Length: 122
Image (cartoon, rainbow, N blue to C red; front, side):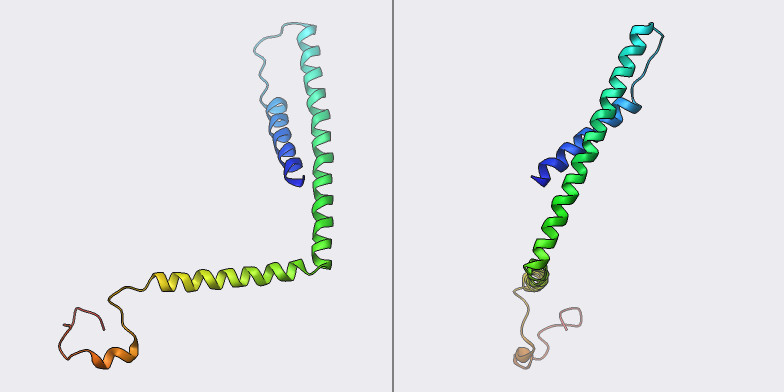
């Protein structure tokens, strides 16, 4: 629900900014034009106020969720999960970075002398 409200807020703010800052008038067409422009501005001000109330609701939802997560230890569990995911990523990259031509240090003594020249592996 918070995501839907956040999306509604973002869309309303975008449209309000467009209506309240991008409206262009190239000539005066009379009082009807003035009334229409005033009505549109008032409508977008109402929508903007509603968007701010939606934003307040999103903040309340997130705050309540954060408090519930903290109370139930979810934050600590998420931190532990994040730590483990970072370690898994690091180890996966190390393993994937190893090539078929690599050998273990213990196997160095089995390499015949002169097998590699100075431009080859250490």
